Image (cartoon, helix red, strand yellow):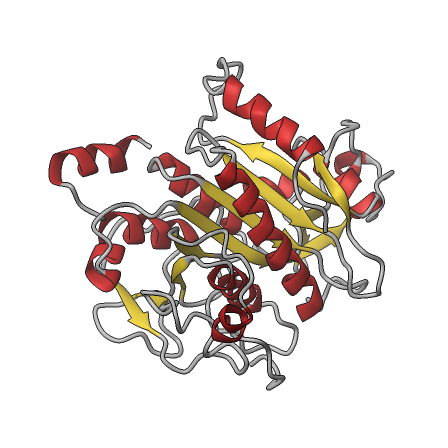
Length: 356
């Protein structure tokens, strides 16, 4: 949190999916509802890229739903996201080379006008590791790269923001980020990069359908609209803090069952997805595969969950929205230096937060 604030004080810088038609920000504004995020500047990133081209909706569609909801609530939004899918990158950063932030002009169908009335028009940038224009096969910046770039130079250069944004949002991820998988999550890693720079952050992740191979638009949309109300509630109460990030996971609602009320949780100590390795014959090579634990818990070994308030239990086993605080400080046993803020946010989630 430290580097960004030091830079700010010293230099005052930083300052397809289907073709279904959806309501735009302009449409929403015309109908005259309250715009609770008016005046806020929000940076959005993710780890799924900004491509939104796969039929499974696993490569960034959730980002556009999040952008849509925040602009509809009145925020000024800029997106800087990885050029390629970077799932599983955690807090990884790139230590050399050149990053290019290339603006996307042709947005996915149905999302073109969502931020037309916002000062930054919801500009979307994909960030690649290249000294020239990003090409189809260009290597990508990591999620943490995109946030660090945006906060330290990119937003000033591309959007003219001479101060830090009010908030960083990451996601909406294709699939939940719970239990041991939180350590691998680029969505969470990007949010950690934001609070490390002194900017409040929330990380959003949505469940897939029953197969966990497809990520229905309805899940993203429900989560994004809930997220806008959640951010509005936190803002109204002065609870947006850079002391820690909030991880917000949303259950599958694509089969018609509504999400249940938000629950304040801890990161589970078991696994939901784990890496499995199978040797090829007697050679030196191993195939990498992902193993799945029982979705409702009750597994053995690394799948066993020992915490009653685990995020995975309440999200996957009980169908609740789950919210957990995530800190950049990995010092075991260190005192919580934002206990008052933590207690107030926990109270808000339990008693005052919006319902799905």
